[in-house]
Image (cartoon, rainbow, N blue to C red):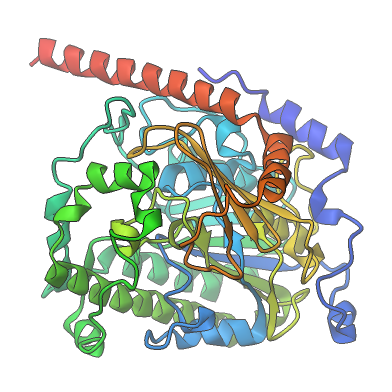
Length: 498
């Protein structure tokens, strides 16, 4: 039912354009001579390690004082840490679909975790496969179509959302999740293995790294997708005990000004998070630290395998997440917010082309990471895909813009983020806009929208260069209405046959 161009037309335009930002002319983001010497024209391989719901602040790399993430430190020492990386949308399916397709969320109209409609877009795995790169996807997919149909050379253990997916997507009146308050008990140690799915994904990835690279005569891309540290916050007894003294409360809670913005109040009502008790909040935050350490250990196993099989000098390794986790800040949990804890992601890149031990402040997003994968294997993205290779981005580019957007469940309307230098605009379709200087105010406590009209106009102009927020908000509402109609029809048909 998709009206998109065919894959052949899409690929043809990309080859003809030769305008992919991956091969732009901008200088590298460091002036280290050894970096330029290492960055030759030989195709590299790439490993993309993407977890789910990792708040970048909860890692030693980004300054957390307690959580143990030695393998993230290890990867950072080998490469470059991007300090201001954003997801395309702070929700699983929209973010992953945008990353998979190379397009913005509003372009592909994947607004929520509802998949009552399926679409057929070219994917980066398919494009690279057709260009002679061996592409492998292991683990969670959760995108606009089923995992085996995404065009990768190999698809192993895909995790798809069964249609119609999430149905609580109504904006007006706002849908309320009946199980919201019950989620507060989702933490603590389990006797059974809480990591069974991810353990299987890592086992498959290690087996692949041990056997397949030496059999291939062409570049390859291995994508490893983990479910954790996604809620619930169940861990092993060992990880629970590790953080016995770390069960704290958020520094900024429901009484903060930003917690009472209309969109924040919507999310608090949608998930009923104001009903969470302090002991539950402490338990959830304690469990989350254990989940992050678990993910870090799995990254370490992958890095060990890369070293063991002599792949380090020919492989770029990327670590990131699909979105962050609010962790009770401003009374909010999980994702769906455009505040930093939800919309920002960790992003570390290592291997040939990335300077060791470097930190980059320039705003970037996950489209840039995908463009970097194309750059690593020396292939060009289709010309109208988003993203610029991280290997080509300045260390401090004050004019560069990162973009995120949200149209999903739990809020009354669409929202958009524009990050430029130290400034961040949250443009709300149905609520007051917010403007923050996140260098001076990293916790987003002081909305400067009424105090700096010039900066507000500047960032709004950057937003309108990407999309018309009013038009896209109307398109989103119309599409969601069609989804709700289709869900109602499905239920009526099921009842008539019941």
